[in-house]
Image 1 (tube, rainbow, N blue to C red):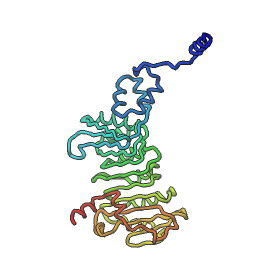
Image 2: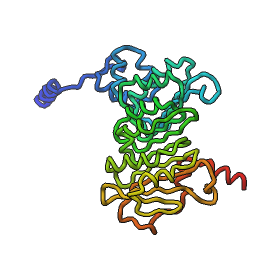
Image 3: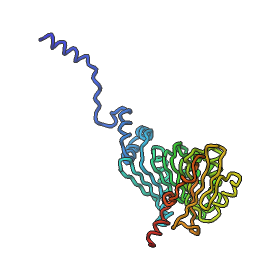
Length: 322
């Protein structure tokens, strides 16, 4: 019995016992801290960043999944001169912050862009300081879906140029009296490769043939979609004229053209139904890269579905009138 106890005592002494840490944060090793930070929401991360430079570095090194992020300059909405930032995490926790000082807002936005991996991200501002803030941001913006509402052309270009690869949709809502340079936007690789994008309230007739030409030049994938609402007439006719030597078929609602890839065609559709008539403005168009084998009988005639995706107002107002 004594022998067994001695052996047990010897084994106990030789055991490798893991160190026991105090509950204080400062006593934890960095790898444990990083595990904890990865589970924190933005409020907790922001508080931790304020404790010490070392903690700030750790916090900033950890990405955070964000379901949706929004930045609005409320002066654009004629409410006041404040600026509003909001985030919603994947588990539904919400964070919002309102600043009168735009410089503080830009500082927060840059931090959020640095750590955030967004499902959806929206920017709405025409403020020149916002434009400068995004232009000066040197990192990447990680978002699956990006929406730019009433932004200056320079802001649109700066943001899209900084988007990380893998963008699934781009939505641009134009503001009156701002000159959007479509050629500059089309030079951005993220725009060239995005599966879906649209422009709302565009005021020129050149978008359709320029996007189609870009798709031809880059041999864009089957399934690529571009939609646009245009406030003036002439886009459909300009497209047909530009690609007169490529037209495969043409009707009141559609123009189909060939590309340099014998397996792919580009189909232009104009949205026309009992609500969106030929005299309705804005005009709605959808451009798609389709298989060259697609038959005319396979075209989808319900334009309401794709128009509603970009602008529901015409149908909602029509329902009210009824």
